[in-house]
Image (tube, rainbow, N blue to C red; front, top):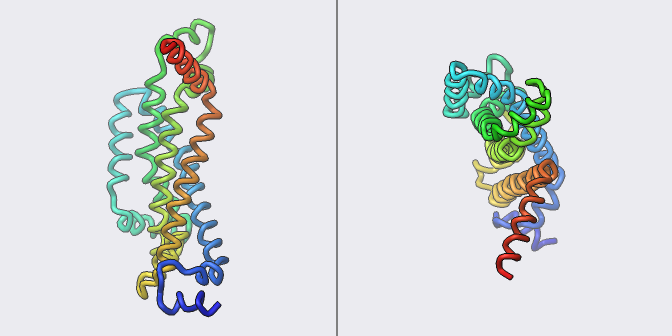
Amino acid sequence: MAAGQNCLVTNDWICGEYLRSRSQELTDATVQHIWITAVSVVIGLLVAFPLALLARRSRRFAGPVLGLTTVLYTVPSLAMFSLLLPLFGLSAALVVTGLVLYSLTILVRNILAGLEAVPQEAKEAAEGMGYGPARLLWEVELPLAVPALMAGVRIATVSTIALTTVGSIIGRGGLGNLIGDALPSFFKAQVLTASVLCVLLAVVADLLLLGVQRLLTPWTRIRAAHADADTVAKAV
């Protein structure tokens, strides 16, 4: 135990005693980080979808929608939070709103790209079978757009996990709170542990979303299997 406690005294980067004594603090920060990220991405997706549909509807709307989301993405995080502060105060809603606005440029562009990549033949075939616009969108276009859409969700999720740490300036940054608290005294074990947990969250989230994408697009696995079979057949 003395050796473990000594690593806190000597301010080592890797310290088992820190993990044992601050386990609840680390758990609470991680849960807050996951909650803020998940809520931000879900709301961002709900906002981005109608915006993408609007941009696809007419070039007259595409320019303003894509331009606005791009401009929002370039606003520095501190400036963004300052602009939103009068509306939301020092609350989690302030951080979530800022993260939603940052996610829009990624999500809108990927949803739009996925919808525009749907083969014209598939749409014409569905229309020939009597599909109306709404049914065509939900049963034909969206399923075929899933790979591009999920790519956008994965990128938005990973970037949101990183950006959530900025919320530490108002005490709503999840693991960023631990990093911010440790910087004045440069508490190495806390900085490293919180940073590693952020990276692990990003990796795990990306792998989970990749798994969801594979479940939603079984035809891609079938196509890959056929391609592998053709390759083997040619080699033989």
